[in-house]
Length: 249
Image 1 (cartoon, helix red, strand yellow):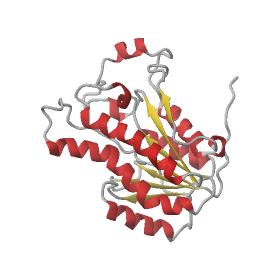
Image 2 (spheres, rainbow, N blue to C red):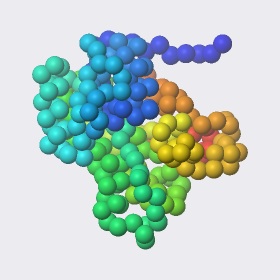
Image 3 (tube, rainbow, N blue to C red):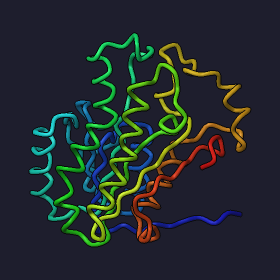
Image 4 (tube, rainbow, N blue to C red):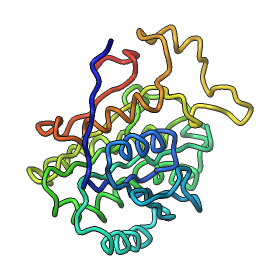
């Protein structure tokens, strides 16, 4: 027997940037189950979740603020306000030391991990400001707090997300709450190489995690659901670490 939450989100409009990610898919399913209307945004041509009356998708590069403004114009034709914005974008393609990376490789990873968040907060904050109890949830990473060799632009980008979110929380209060989530290793495509093996020593990692497992996407999306909800109405400017105890802050 376990205590479970039952969110009711009928009439709520939520934008998810990076909606085709593993956490994004899980979050969309939870929001649709709660009767929310979801607007997904990602770089792929189509959504990985079936479109429907309450599930919309827009292809756009979140690093392109003009493209995001075009999406905003389309969303405004359907709804007059947004109650929640979730920024999930983040990736790393080249695992090299800071001294080995050229500036273009650095900027690509850093911009996906941070600039996408900056752009969407800037573009959609006006729609959030029209709603009551609006919330922004930005995705950071546990790696931003410990440092990890060969992850330089990713850890820097995700650390920037935390600092940026604290400043934004102060600037947008009391109308809009802004919080971040910093997961540990999550069982999504992000942690796997093309050959299906993990990018790190999984056995060694599990030994340092008190709860002895990788996070499932739904264990992260459930925390995002909480931060979007009225249950978190007195939380802003905070970073919640969801890592099974691997790092205790």
